[in-house]
Length: 236
Image (tube, rainbow, N blue to C red):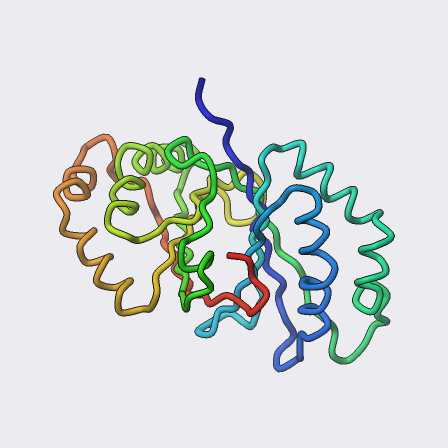
């Protein structure tokens, strides 16, 4: 039987221009993440995007082992007195000139069959310096989006793993804006190492064969790449 596939909430807290986000950091670190950990979600990622061109944001990755977990954990946390106490300043903050965030965007992703569970990178487990690249591939139809997922399962995932691109997750977007698309995250110690590994990927025979396979033509209409760094309290 195939292993159960994870679900991921990929969340973006859009921040007001030049507004401090210490209140949001405190809530995530002291209230939300401990509550998620207590409910069996062992590692939660929080990232900034230093080179963001569309406004400052905090990005949060919450992995779930089932769709039931997404619903139950969210409902449980919202009603948890401990969370309400630890996050009181954030949760009860009045409308202000410098709010904790502007708006929240959220996507629900289903893990690919080729990597059904997310992986905390070795660099994160050791607390070493690391950078992440998050790539989103949009397609012009649902069928083409699924075709690109098949292409990953057919060899792209394994090749990225073999070339030390250190995938964290691959997810098909089920709910959220800009559908249909998929999103995945890679980890490297630095940008230079990451670029070298990508170069090896681009010229590898497996990728060349997949890229030229008639089954997988014209299945991506737009690619968005974001480079991110973990905040001090990120568990990924």
